[in-house]
Image 1 (cartoon, rainbow, N blue to C red):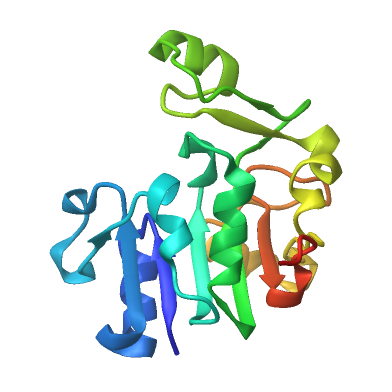
Image 2: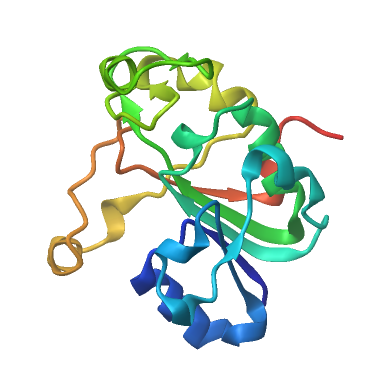
Length: 184
């Protein structure tokens, strides 16, 4: 199995490495030096490097709260990440979904302007709960993970917030390769 893990948090990264081994685990980030050495994080700039990912290569592409930081057309980045999946692969991600509508500004803004527009100083977009069908829903047949079968005690044990059916910043999307709506 091959896993591409972007902005790899240590707990999940170590768990994945224990399953797929060092050879199968590919951790990447714009700033690899900020991560634990045992994760062996390599550099990637999704703005310029996503196009060079090999096609049909990974069994799993995983990222949590990354796309709001990418100062380019996020559709292109997501398309290339999905293209890198094997035919039976899965693309699992979480994005900050805010009340309201999608908004984006990849131009120069101050930290205060970014915080006011997107909720955090280093974000360049926000995904709006009211128009997911008109943003990511035009790229993917969206498949939010269904928490209803997970016992409340399990959710509490792993500090997973109780989840509603409405998209939120805690929604996890589990996309299959064939969920991509934009075909090459």
